[in-house]
Image (cartoon, rainbow, N blue to C red; front, side, top):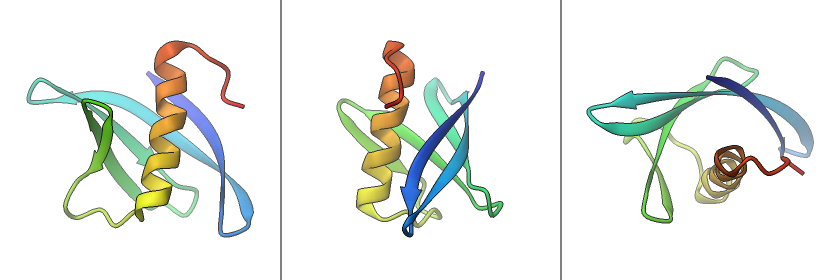
Length: 78
C-alpha cells in the first residue's frame, strides 16, 4: 500500500512516498524522498530504526516514524 506524507526538511515542505512491505516476517516501510534518496525503516516495540546503510538523522527518523504511526492508526496526518 502506498501513502504520501508531508514533512518539513531543510526549511521547506517535502512530500515523501511511503510503501509498506515485509522482509523476513518483519513489517518494513520504504521511504522515497523527492530527490530520489530512499531509506528502509522498521519498528521494534515503540522505537523506529533504519537499515545500517541509511543515514537519516535521529530527529528525521523519529518524525517520519510518528507519521507512519498515524497511518497505522488511521489518524489524520496533521
